[in-house]
Length: 258
Image 1: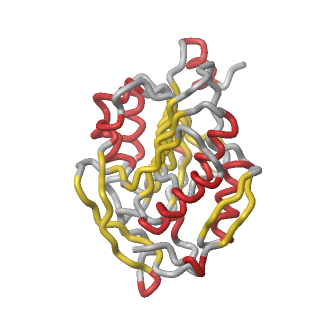
Image 2: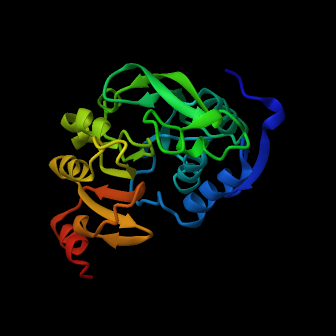
């Protein structure tokens, strides 16, 4: 599958220029990443190592390079069309030390079925997924095969940030990587809940993160919530930021004090 050159659009975002397929979808992503700073993190390391899983066309990757110019980034994207755009954006924006990888994260390595948007006019590419979501129906959806790798296989050294936007495989991927998650200093993920995918369980995700020594914070609609207060509509989304905190930081995270 090749990138349809007639459908490419060049859009400015965060001081960079990106090739994308759907301008409306891209501008939403740009606002979330550069406007809301949803992936902002602080580190004293001059060259942090970041795993960007579900990199799409590279907006979060660009954000990381803007705030951490010496960062080393492994950017994974499963959709072959979107991956080609990711490669192009990494190249023409001159990002050093960024390695694009055509792969999905999965609980087992090999190949995985992936549901993608069949049309450039369908704003579903942001929701490309190995799990058939409610919007993956009808003529606007195409099924492709993508290479799959495990998160544990990538955790071969300390990682400053694992960013996961993997559309419904959060639980399975984190469970598989649990024995090696101690190498991650922080995890920022988008959790996708739906009755169609009951195996993706928020309580299990939190348990795995805590078991790795990370302290999670859940946000829904921009507000910090506790697990019992999550609005579990059909479907629902959560933003989870889990960090390796010292005792005082953990008290502040849990109580909101200070």
